[in-house]
Amino acid sequence: MPTEVEYYTEISDYLRTSILDNIVEFGSFIVDFIPCSRIDLRIGINEFMRRNSIQDSNLREFAELCRGLKIDILGIIYSVDKKQGIVIICEIKMGSLSLNDYSQLIGYCIASDTPYGLLIGIDGQKSHDFKLALIQKPALIEITRTNDISHNFGICCWNSHTKKLIFDNDGAFESTSQLIREFVYNFY
Image 1 (tube, helix red, strand yellow):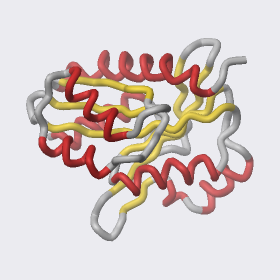
Image 2: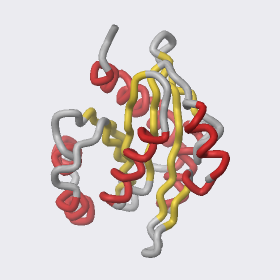
Image 3: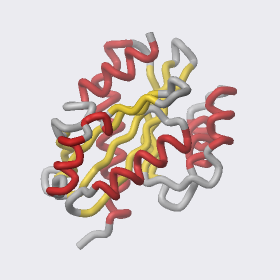
Image 4: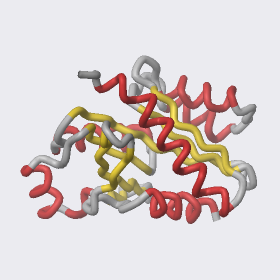
């Protein structure tokens, strides 16, 4: 059976392709998802800017603030028209998803001021306790901090047989299309 890390590339490729295929109608965007298991968020952002010949002082400054933060997958949606990027952190887990897994993603997003996070379970659903926590505390899906920074979290299942991502209705995003609309809204 493959390990969690062995799924990072196929999940990254799927997210990149499905978002890029559906965001083109809204303008010119560069979309990339980078497996980061052995590198920190700063190196991933700098690699994205280097590969795409982007000189963006805001992204570079953001990257420096993320030094040492190791995540599973880094996603960046960059508006060529607006010269602005949005970062999304993806946390991948084997099997069922727990409140501990979700708390880890929340912590990464808060520590880095990243507005979007996806918790992705490989061939698993939410644990019973996690479902109860979301019912009792629905505000866990969209967190607004006192400094007006908002964080929105999606919950997904990666089906390793069909190689597709299935969004859970309890998350902030119920589909790739809804996630894309959220990104576009932030750009315009």
